[in-house]
Length: 352
Ligand code: SAH
Image (cartoon, rainbow, N blue to C red; front, side):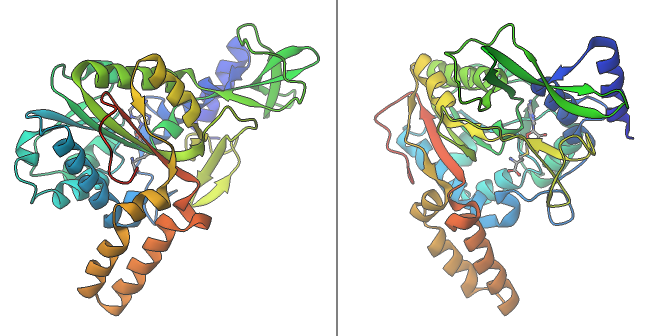
């Protein structure tokens, strides 16, 4: 049993069952033992591979999107170039390399990374050596003032969700408890605070206050300082039913209640709830589209061809396979979705 599992057991023994959000927060971001706080989980040798780690093309095209958005915003200078949850810093490094030729863009950009993990901050520092970078741990601590262009790739899926279902005339919340043999298991308890019309189907409903709060803060930032944000994640436009909590370890699905703190835990993002947050904050939101279509409209095909021209046979095979992985509907192309938020409804974003 690892430290975090021990800690969770002691907490349940002392205070009773924990809800799914408490569990996710503990497993991912406990200051000492949390998954993101203790390691670099990405890449072929890691637990999972994200789009920027699959190919430089991803970050380069996001860079092109950022530069295009900056021009459509009338080239604010200075502006804040913000990434939420930058992982290894690969996306930002590729985006900056791709925008070197855009006159004025990098001179105007104040690069800010929102990251809680000390290990990943170190990685980001290495990936972005040569650039001035600032870090914050909390979106409410961002420097105030200039317009913002933000990107969040696979960030919202790491923020905790809670799960509820309607059964025997009451809403119940999914929790994690210890059985008499001392094993962790999923249980349910009557919810005191969840309010929704009864759903006799008994299906799970996922709700994330953390995501809504984060989206609210991001929207306020965009509205008050002007700007735009690009959100990319796997998910759906809800409301929808069903539970999507999942663990991944060594590039394979793993059991949520095993290897706690040593596996990545996520839940699909409900873009519908992000849209609701944006509307509440009077921020404009684009339609939600698949990552495959988005990257295709940004010209990933052409970029792949250009890279292939300079590549060896092995590299050409890698480029082709990365292109497939990022865009094919049966791979990341349709499960991963893209949405942009903006204070100005007259901006027509590239790819959206
Ligand atoms: N965007 C990167 C990494 C995605 S993983 C990529 O695509 O490769 C999620 C990232 O968000 C990690 O960098 C993790 O440390 C960070 N993170 C998770 N929860 C966070 C929080 N509450 N605040 C800030 N960063 C967080």
